[in-house]
Image (cartoon, rainbow, N blue to C red):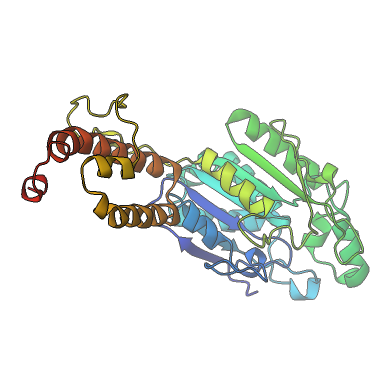
Length: 355
């Protein structure tokens, strides 16, 4: 990756909160979050699934150089400098005015913790807003207390290992200090933490982030074990994958769809027609036979079924679904009270019914 930081918008439509994806060691703002072999219509890039499922949020990716080898990393910054660089980038684009959530993989989690620490310690008002606005972090295989990844990569890179690899060494005092600062921040403000760690060895060689290293030790968080290795844990293959399903579920709780005044407003004047009728429990066919219009049942039933299929396939969210069900119930009550009983059941002609 180029030494120039990459900050890309996935989907931003004036949502109520911002979600930023941060990749890890040797990662990429697109490839890290892309799986293979999925049949999802949105494609392999699963942030697009979130953008479709939770449309009330804004989504971005933050990319940065993070090489294994020192000779390729000469222009790379250390974690503190990279955090200041990323923090200024977030400030420039106005982050901090809305609730902020990070989704991080591996080293990306360390970078986010350093961003929050630097922002919280800063006297810069815009930087402080970034830290104060953080309401949630998802850690995917982040080594909070060191990782065997450093030893594994040093085995292949030898003396050419970059500062990023050294940062991942077990019992690193820098990591301990960073995590202590992070714990203090979580005690001072409400940040929802979710943690996931791999259960399979990467390349059948080593378990990169074990359960102990994955646990940041804050807010009584319970790390979730995932049937994946260090590289695939951030690549859910479909919407039923536990990583994606969990992040979507928890993200919706952290940043719920705001209640709309227009949705909660009464659709009609209060005339009592929204009360459930206790006197009429007949199905559609029985009602039409009673009204002498059984010949029109096939058309009415087919129309009803087509509407139901479209309703189910539309993927309506819970709040919107409830809104529509209430509307349909209201319409049904009005139909029974104003059209069916006084007109159809009394033999009124079509011109009167459709007037």
